[in-house]
Amino acid sequence: MPLHELARLILIPPEKELTLESLMGLLVHQRVFAKCEGGYLLTPISEMMLSEGANMGAFVCFATEPSPEQLLFTSKWFKDTGKGTVFQLAHNGKQAWEVLKEKPELGNLANNAMSSHSKEFVRILVAKYPEIFEGINNLVDVGGGTGSTVKIIADSFPNLRCTVFDLPHVVDNALNNDSISVVGGDMFDKIPPADTILLKTVLHDWSDEDCIRILKKCKEAIDSTINNGKVIVVEMVLDAETDDSKETETKLIYNLCLLFFFG
Ligand SMILES: C[S@@+](CC[C@H](N)C(=O)[O-])C[C@H]1O[C@@H](n2cnc3c(N)ncnc32)[C@H](O)[C@@H]1O
Image (cartoon, rainbow, N blue to C red):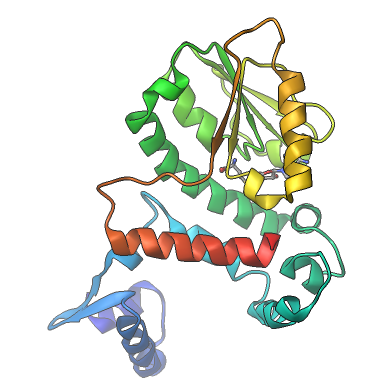
């Protein structure tokens, strides 16, 4: 795409086109775009930010909000011997989930980031590892956000009854349809009963002690009369066909986000 066309599409006034060109130069240097004779091309990095597929753009928006200067706390955090996260240091000790509740616009960014992650990675999960879901009747996706993950699972396995379980203000925005139940609550109190519990990109947010508390609640939720009950833990899905640089960038963006929000 030529520069002037790009400027026109993203509503940059002509007097700022020169600055846009400098910015594009920097982004070309960082391999976010490539330069060709007629203008600029997408690279594997910018392809990841297209709205279809693994839209890491939503992740970048989340990781750089509410304000980049908070990243300055990272240096302080490394030197600090306290137990909190970078995010807590920048927010008077409050945990990320509390602040996401208090600031709905930031909460929406977080939910969109997770949802875009799910759309790509759960699609790979159900296509490449269908055996994980075979033989199960009902599944609760704990910390399932607004339900993108269970939607893909329910569409792929129509006989499976799926529930999305998350904090009440999060599931308020969840998809609600015949194949999916929506339950609001706190996983540290009680998880709805099921024969299978899914924890996708949830445990990494918590300390070892908290993970043990969550896993004990999962065990309580699985009916003891079922002998094939299970907990499925998904942290990272790798697709053998995925371009190496894409995979590296995905991990980088993801890990930066984790470092900042969850320590
Ligand atoms: C990193 S997100 C993962 C979302 C989703 N599993 C996914 O992969 O798209 C973690 C989720 O845990 C939820 N969560 C945090 N504390 C929770 C709690 N005490 N009980 C239930 N869900 C909680 C958050 O609201 C958020 O949706």
